[in-house]
Length: 468
Image (tube, rainbow, N blue to C red; front, side):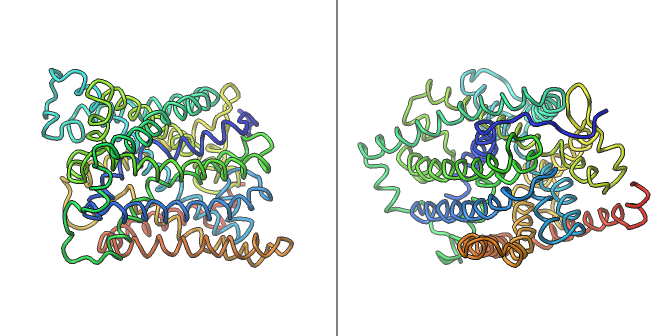
């Protein structure tokens, strides 16, 4: 067994990882959610996408400065250690390992399965599901759950056995996923201008949302964009594997985030031209694809959507498999000697990867019971696709504040303006979560606190000393 990961990813692969991890699931998954939360108010939805994109950009700019200075094992953990301290870095690493990475990966596995079944049942209407597709079988049926488990295991195998193949898959799926987004952005606008759908959607809401002001609707919508925009920070988890990381990682973050924000806004406008607000709320973006491109080509685009979700899941699994390794490489966490081992043949921390897969399965089970099938009701039910993302913005705050205090050699813009904007954006996302999710925040924070306490048991001074 080796103890270090080698440099194997270039700038283009890193850019594709930023774009590929972020784009491809949330924009399809959350576009319908944002329309629903705004009552079909299209301008309000566009503002939500713009605000979410601006928050992502300023955070990425702030962390790109840190990426030029710190390079060790795992970007976000490295930055926390350098700015705040090793103890804080440990809890950041424990959080992303046990909650953030696996929760998001499990959601993406389900989305990949869901859109695969949507494509299959569209091209083969005679295909029988135990729960018919018209009754939600593509989302909640046993076929979807079986396919979800397969995708999780397949993503684990690809990342665990061949990291280079995983990188190639990320590049390929990134290119593929751009096809439906660009076609919908261009075709939808043209289609909507010709038949008047676009103008009508901008001036007519689908339905009023009772008891909510436009400000609260906007907050709820911005909170939903967090899932669609999140994931870029995961690329920092492989900074030890990026060639010339101090130059290429910040470039990848900035270039990738610019591409993402532009595509999201134009895609959302294109969707508005492809179907009425009511159709989009009830049927999602599929209605726009079919209206603009016809049944055959519209269904082919559904295949591209499924592939793009798979690519996003692959990128998330990349971060998941390295979670415990980032802690163990510092002599922290449970059994550092075991989980810091790197396989000599694959150059992958396979022991860490196994735990990552198990955590994905656990969060996937929770997501299915609580959010998809809604079999679990009452206390401790929360949206595991959004709330873990909000938490990481809370973790950003001390890092950004300490960066402003310590980076004395940088210009005023780099030291104060950009990090301060990132702090403001992070606070906005936290506030949006509190307003949007209500009591769910309490249930999530209790679960979060319990997991952090468990993590603390593995970070006792005597435990750490014994590990070394």
